[in-house]
Amino acid sequence: MKTTKKTGFFVALSLLVIQTSQAQTLKDALKFTENHQFDVATAAYHKLIAEKPTDGSLYYYMGENMYKSERFDSAAFYYEKGISVDPAVGLNYVGKGKIALTKNDEATAKPLFEKALVQHTQDSKAYIAIAEAYVDNEWKNMTYALECLAKAEKMDRSNINIYMLMGDAALISTNDGIVALNNYEKARDLEPKNPRPLIQMGNLYERARSYDLSFVEYKKAISLDVNFAPAYLKLGDLWYQYKNYDSAIVNLEIYVKLSNSLSARVKYAKYLFLAKQYQRSVDEIEKIEKIDKSFNILNRIKAYDLFELKKCPEALISIELFLKNAPTSGDKLISEDDRYYGKILACNGKDSLAIPYLKSANAKDSSKLDVYRELYNAYIKTKQFNEAISILQKKFTLVKEPSVNDIYSIGLAFYQKAAFVKDSTINLKADSCFKIVTERQPDYVNGFMYRARANATLDPQSTMGLAKPHYEAAIAVAIADVEKNKKSLLEAYYYLGYYYTLQADKVKALEYVDKILQIDPENKEGLQLKKYIDAKLK
Image 1 (cartoon, rainbow, N blue to C red):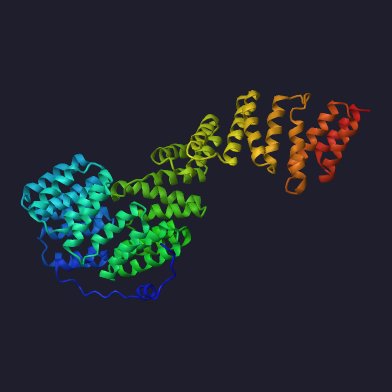
Image 2: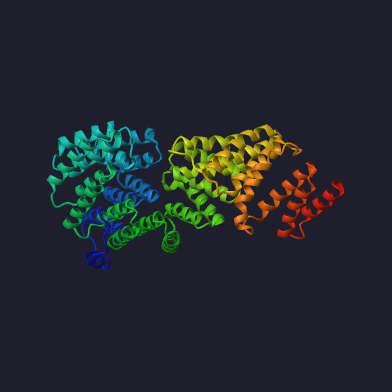
């Protein structure tokens, strides 16, 4: 798929003003939810409930609307309300069980599902709703969900939701793309004018990284219904995969206009973060918060944004607020939460607290290479040198060739450990690392400087001159930019001046002292060394 410019089609759509009449039927409200017009749907359900306050099914569908807009605490409220209004409507027990699954609590969910089925043994809706609960929560074991779908199919072979869920279940449980595609095609053939099966087919191709095929299916969905908001959400995600952030944002903006809901704006804020437009994401979040602060997920996105903007104290407030509210809001914790919380804690100087979260993030997803560096830094700051070395060595198993920076960092860890435990022999390992650094990056002054320092600890009296060739090599590189490398040059000249003093070579010793004083005429160490040379070598 090639990158394209914004077409007149997209520009026209982005200017659409959504005009929807107030819903008069449940069918209208369900359609709004399906099109991600969650706020419009909410208003419709309120109206329907006001007209029929004892209809327990209306509370279930309101709960579903809240659930699909990721407002899980509100969803739980309406499922419970539906049960209290009419316990005979078993769908609300399914909803309550689905909330339990968001917390990985199948032990609570399963009896609720069974209770719903007792009341709806001949109703395919209950079986479909249970299967959807497992699919929505990406439950790996889909046995029970598939059993429910098989029973639902016997009751109603014309319901496309059954086949779409069968396809989803196949992908989640066994990653069987062929079975998934067959079921999506059944759904498409049952309702050729419905864009939803095409979205699922596009999603299947996207999972298989056949992005060109995904693009085709999403465009087909739009051709069937130009106002179908979820298609633009998927297109935005697809452009994001291509790292074409401009096109991704354009499609997300269309999605927001079509959906006309706060939930859509929450997703938009998330994609602004993914597109690395951190300040725009924060700005959008703060606009949403002025209207409604109940979206706990905004605290997560805002924390990530603020960390990337180097606003560490503010990021810590946001991430801790998210984590505090997550158990009740229903937001699932992911490896990124551990990764960012650890990085944010470290950014605030709380390295010892950061380590457990960074380790957890690494255990959950070892492919995030930045975590290895964050852990290394935290281990170094807390004097856990062996762990610092080990974490970078673990990283080496994931890359084709270790970077010079990582080899240098391991050398530094050995060097600092040697000083900490007062065992200079450890610097033999440090020197081996710095040797590789100087060979692979011969213009890097610090590589030679640390070789010199490591060897200096192995020759504390400087009698053997082990550091001499490395300081000389450092000078040869550093002299190209005296101002930039001033400290390194002063250190190297001082060592060589002292070394030649020990060798009783007054001419060479004073030569290096003069070099010190040329750079810094008031240098105390240089002036003291000159007095020492004059006194010792008369």
